[in-house]
Amino acid sequence: MTGRGAARRTVQAVADVDIAIGEGETHGLVGESGSGKSTTGRILLRLIEPDAGTVTFRGEDLLALQGVELRQMRRHVQLVYQDPFSSVDPRYRARDIVAEPWTIHGLYDRVERRRRADELLARVGIDPSQGDRRPASFSGGQLQRIGIARALALEPSLIVCDEPVSALDVSVQGQILNLLMDLKRDLGIAYLFIAHDLAVVRHISDRVSVMYAGRIVETGTRDQLFRAASHPYTLALLAATGTDRRASTPETPASATDDPLAGIDSSIGCAFRARCPQAQAVCAVERPELIDRGGDHPVACHFPATVATSASYARVDGDDSQVGEEVDEGHEQTGDDADAHDEGRVQSPQST
Ligand code: SF4
Image (cartoon, rainbow, N blue to C red; front, top):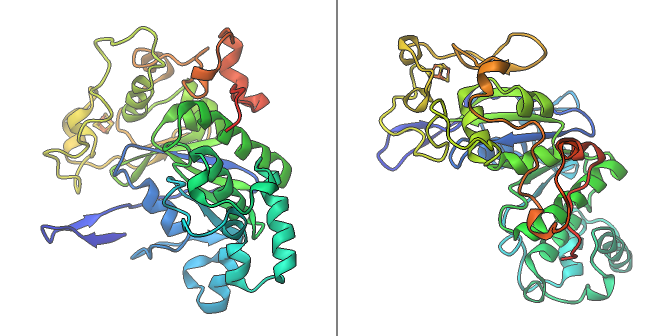
């Protein structure tokens, strides 16, 4: 996809992005601000039209759909926004926010919309007796629950979650992640879960793709990414999450939050080369392709790290993330916590 920048130079926001999401699967899409992950989500929703490429949903080319067919497709693919406050109309009551998709699509009469809205509010943990309240009287976590209820209204099979917890307090993030995981388990929903924080992605994802400068640089299962990451940028992100308990080692790359493309012509070579401790001459002239060297774990790097070398960047075995940690007093961390995701709960006893 391309667009025009302020200096009238062409900026390529995303390129060669290839993501497959299975039924009921959560695919984490992670990268720093400006990496192209939100653009990717919006292309999937057809809120942005790409210049080229294909977007296929259940075998159907989404980019070819128009009119009624496009509206029908949009029932199946919904969005949960980053900022729950700006994503709702402050004049609407909670029940009306949830019922809005039915109003847009002309579904159900007023009584039935109210009944269904109350059902969905209860499903996401909001007492239906609060359905007449307006957004200003809810907390951020409660509003995000209402936003999730709205996304569920049309019974989608895929929800794009665009940084859905990054605007929330740490104590609330775990509760929203738990809600999303419960809905996935009960309703079989698939998620494209966009986040800049690997620790958050780790809790919820089955597969994870890492984006840098508009391209996927590594894709794998959650365990592959967190136990055997190969791309130097993924390793830098892991180190930035604080999961490396040995702090900075001489091999630790530059911060993953530095200006990503400062002084770099990203149209040639590897866009990460100025920050990469493994960079060699070829990296400046030849773009690394996303290559699967085995195990369905593609990496775009001329010199991917092995499991042994990746240990010098970040150690994640036995790690527990920050999500929900502030409200998890008394929960002693053990090596078993690394796989707490498999049981699917983030520890956070308070309600939002
Ligand atoms: S291709 Fe070269 S510069 Fe890019 S990540 Fe790999 S080693 Fe580093």
